[in-house]
Image (tube, rainbow, N blue to C red; front, side):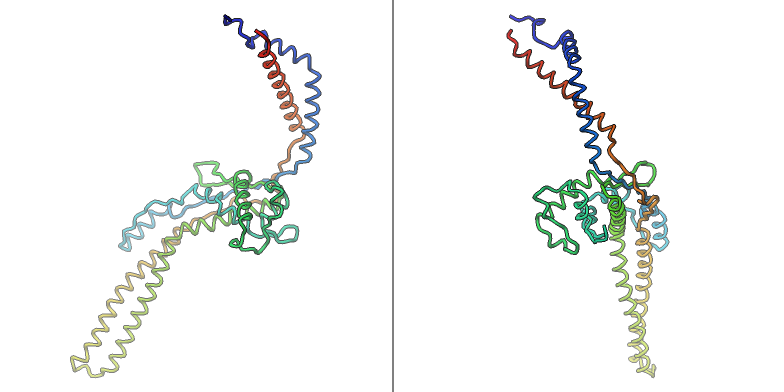
Length: 345
């Protein structure tokens, strides 16, 4: 029977012995570290610099902030309006900015690079083949091709590019939760591409954000505008009909002749009251629509020059040498464990 102290374990003595063995092989660590450092420096020298944009903007969600004044005005008109819950306030704009719809829309937009028109995704693949495999080299996104005519391979590559770009190249954040100031950063190997993508993603997000924030108010305003125009037409028509009836029935001595005039007068009063109420609602809807439009104000634009991020040769050399030496130590440790396990009891 084997007692507990006789088990083959790595004790403090064996660890000390292992360290001594490693020290005897100092020349190997020097060689591995030196070769790894050289390889790291070569790798760093072959890496293209990455350009990082920096854009900040302030967001004023007017609909939420001024709802109290809007409700006071509505009460003056004799209307009772509920504030409700707005799901599009605040940080939702960040999720919209990183959404598939926004990123893919910008990637498929067109701009001029190297004096030629490109879709942004096509030029992105031109400056880096990071996300394309050899089988995908024949897949292109030419200028002018409608999205509806994309092949399955084009849709797949576009989706993969969106996922990678949104995760690694697009940063949208709100650094300070106490203020409504947001920050956008885009990274790419080309300085102009970085600026163009930053400007486009912010502009597209702002446009879409305004659209969804004001959609209900705009639809209400359009319906009321049509109704008010129709009611004004009915009112004008009744006024004109009354004048015609009065001209035909010159002698008002007969009661029967007065009836058509009274009917038109009643219509005028009804249409007038309805028009007055609808016009009041129209003005209120117009104010609500304007009040719902959020304000996005650029504070710091993504101007040149962009921040240039390049892999440092010395830093990379040190990291590669350190990791390589750790890997050698790990290999020797595994060999030692295997050797002890094979030793007969």
